[in-house]
Length: 241
Length: 268
Image 1 (cartoon, rainbow over the protein chains, first blue to last red):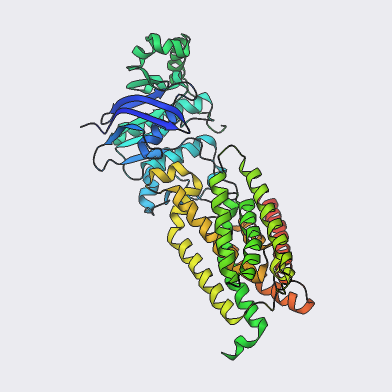
Image 2: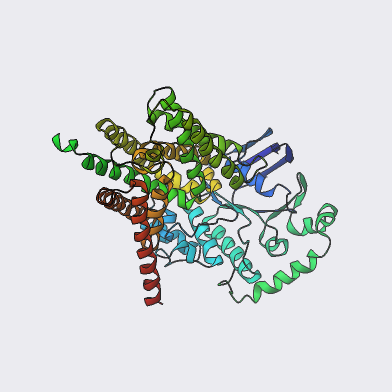
């Protein structure tokens, strides 16, 4: 059975139809990337899955007792809020030191338990968010533009981390991205969203689809190649961002 | 309990009760940037007092009802075409103005407005002590019960949803706690300076705290010290209690900031 099955989902927010007739499913262990222009309802779709927004019609069907790990878009911790990485991992439910260390290591940020969240670099911060999402041994990871604010090598490194996590843990990944070129090579399937599902399929297929080109132009083919080039020459510049 | 016959002892006990409930709540006010929201809630209490005196009902009840009404109104109006800042600016000042005008009509009731605006050391009776500690206990219980959920919702609403927490419900819990603290604090602190006793101890604690709990604990100690010291100073110098307590906590804040700067400088 699919982890998630969405059937004919409509979401209206403040009088606007944000999503209409969206149907999709997430299978065990696959990486799906949702791409789409700003305001195309990508974040709303993830929020509908976690139950933060209700549907007008249609349904989001989750497999019984599906464990979901969620990495939100733009988590801004106020500088007035003191928060160590360790404490952050124990929100809202306390976790053991062992599992805290384990998820941090899996996310590529071991030895950071005592650091203050507001002092982390962009890349470290996103990895701590990823670590927190891994705590409940999720079968599905939801990531909403997880590399926002990271530079390109930083993003590429982060997506490789996600691939590693998928390999180690076998969880499915559903993520939203605007960095098509960076993400596509790492995805099993791409869903192109613009209020409705424009097209979907394997990354190469989608990149060639006329609906996709109508939204994003044809330039991304070259960018896809650029990413593959970078993939082998990454320098791990993740301190800035 | 004969020692409760001393008005200073009663005021001190009231001050400590108010401070230990205001400080942890104040941390959330700081983290969530709700200072202005707190002010609006507190200012609405003047209208509550005026009407409570008109209809001879309990001041505590009047303040509680109007603080809650204000909080609900402002929450309801936010995100409907007005910036939160503007909504709060309109409502906080209107509530205060209307409250003061209504109070001025109460010529037959001898109302010492200064006492309600700035606090009065003589105002705390034995019944008030019960109400203050009852309210403070309620707020502390609520905070203790919802602490993790509140923190998660404060970090990020969607993070809360994903963990099965409804951030709007947590927000509501905070709003209620805020109204209760305003209601129990009004006699000691006065309507104009209640929020200061929430924010200043929290801000003073910030440079020395590593975790949210740590910050709430330090803020509580600082708040209680300010209340006890401030009340005694107010007694010695015959000054209004609210401003005196706030002056003392402001001094602690200045010391803490300087201390924090020196520490940062020493540690490079």
